[in-house]
Amino acid sequence: MNHFISPEDSFAVEKAIQFLISEYTKSGHNPKPVILHSLRVGLYLLELGYEKDIVITAILHDLIEDSDVTHSDINEKFGSKIADWVLAVSFKSDITDKVERYKEMYKRVVLTGRQAVIIKAADLHANSIYIHLVPNYEEQKALVEKIEFFISLTKEYSNEPVINKLKEVYENEVNRLEKEKGK
Image 1 (cartoon, rainbow, N blue to C red):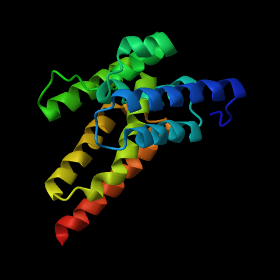
Image 2: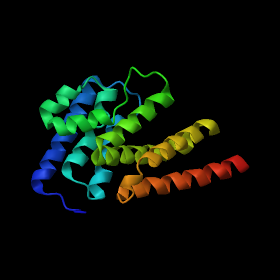
Image 3: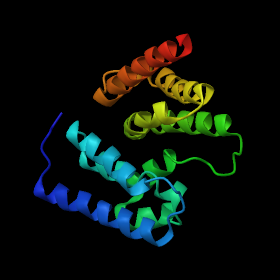
């Protein structure tokens, strides 16, 4: 993988960061730190050497879910490929059951292909740092099971560095939960 980003690509990534901050500031509706999280996901993939369009999509990945930004808005600014990948990693809000909603999205991510899988894996990796903060053991276990389900769907992408790092997180969380249960 190329761990170098060209000046042209740097400007494109910066454009995505500016769009994220501007649009989320206008209409964001998630009480969690969405901007920081989105930047962490994008910069993590940049650090791993993923290509510019994947990094840009990672930066924008929560906008459809957590603001008034639409697929069309992203398509207009960044093109259909990036807009489609953002849509693929977004929950369908009309699915009310949380388990059904994430399972449907993960399956759609895999059907969309490598780029969406990489972005969702990085998103799950970034979110995993909060699992231990969830006060209820059963809720922590459910979050780890979400990672397990995603990994089970992504076997054909096992050569991707981000998938391997997510597997490490999963194994660490399983071990931590086993210790917690034994207390």
